[in-house]
Length: 156
Image (cartoon, rainbow, N blue to C red; front, side):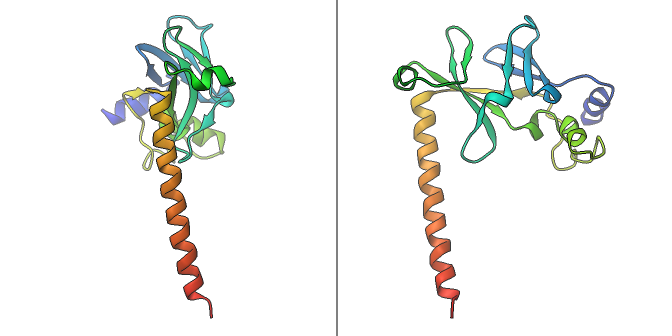
């Protein structure tokens, strides 16, 4: 099955990702996702931020309107109904296009980052996302403190 996915990709078929019930074409070269049903509906990855761990693109998302918001207003930030759209990073979206971008062979990244046959973005309530990100930040601070203490102990 993986061989078939690789063959399709090398023949030029772009990956697809499911986003909140809709299907989008992944075009890493243009850094965008285009709706299969409405090609004028585009999500610009280049306008999005990464999460703290660097594993996902994140953007504010109005689920009712199926619309992304690249710039956050204070009103949006306190809106309890607002969501965060979480899209996997580029090595999961299209490792072949990323390899091409960096001048590598088309299949060079596939061993570590195989083509994902069922790509899907996640939609999460904004308040839940903020809680999880804050926990991750606290965890990172604790790890950093431990590393700093260990380094001090190694000094003469």
